Length: 304
Image 1 (cartoon, helix red, strand yellow):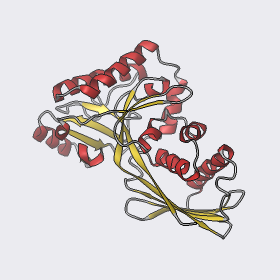
Image 2: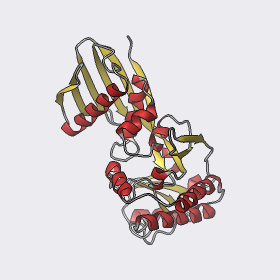
Image 3: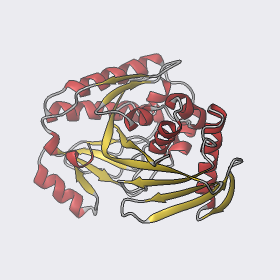
Image 4: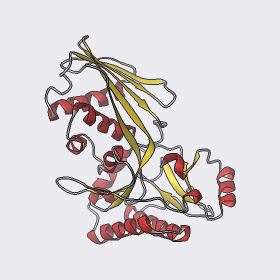
């Protein structure tokens, strides 16, 4: 058997953060950057896992004994345990899928900084599902607490409208190519959020009311079709205020970006990872970012 290669995109959640967990329709964007997985069968009775970052530096190495997936050796005990749990879940989902070969050499390679929160975990779940021929969403929901929008992004060819429904989520491919994209920036806050913890915290707060879910879903569709930066900024502001009221938290425009001469929009878990900025006056906005020491400022097309 020859080596097999698989690919999964990263993700950005533009709308319906948190509320997508309860069925609000979200606009989700797969990123240009993603993650590769290459699996090569061996005869050594082990699954040897190597993970490389965007600079081709190995950040994780794990050796698991086959067939019981006992961890023999690792460079990171916590990451090795998470990997073991995913592989064990895959075996429960489809018995024998990992044990189909006497051994494996598996290598993963990220194209984005793994601290950026662009989906190193969700793309890995997608890659495992592709490699082991699993039902991707069933595997995801058996092992993750998220909404699944990130898994939808992993194999999407462009932006999607995502609605979490039972038994299967609704994923609709859409066009989203704003003519004002040159006046948008992704800014990394340098405070990667623990998505699992954030999701669990939100779910404990209780179910959102149907009116709020409809309102946010309507905003998602409006954001999808708006054609000018002023209208887009206004919709983002309305969205930020709604989510802020639902969470009982201040918006990013009231905290890290107080005084910024444009609209700021949180993405995904509030308080970390990336924000989206509108630049009504690009020179003044970029100067504000420089003065306030935001170092990772990326053009729209760099990520999407």
